[in-house]
Image (cartoon, rainbow, N blue to C red; front, side, top):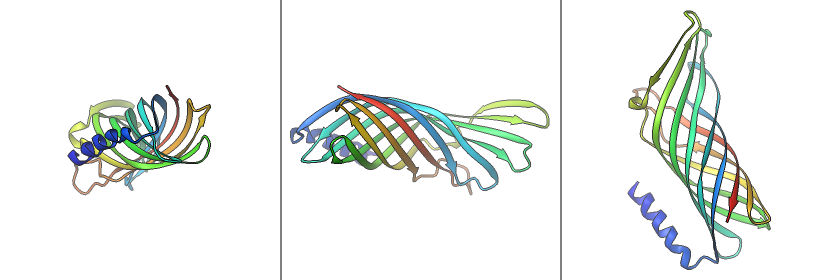
Length: 195
């Protein structure tokens, strides 16, 4: 993690060579899943994300964009016998650093790493046999740190409003339980504004 923060500081120091720096805000919809649960029927859980960005336009058609976002993620599960349903809700503070390429004016493709720091983790369980619903804190069995790789595409409207689609592929196991390998997968739709 120290290397990631050091890299981010070096990136910010690049602003001396940047042709243009934009500060912005963005928000959008998360459609998230947790991969690796073979014994359950899984569906996506809808959440939101919001935060700030800095865009450093470098030489030609390249830009680098670090972001600081709050992200509500998780997934919905059903047992194969349909006796219970579970909703897992995980809130993260995420820091993506995206490299953007503009093949034509306005249109960009992007890719880059992301680190996430877990803020909270809860599980809501609906027992369909007893009709009893419970909610429990599962932060103690959820890892505090998450690493992802992101890729996306977007469009700058009049160089100010940004419409964007991004997919985040989790690289680290989010569970501390033995013999469990669960990773985040998040599809994001967002709108942003650059000042």
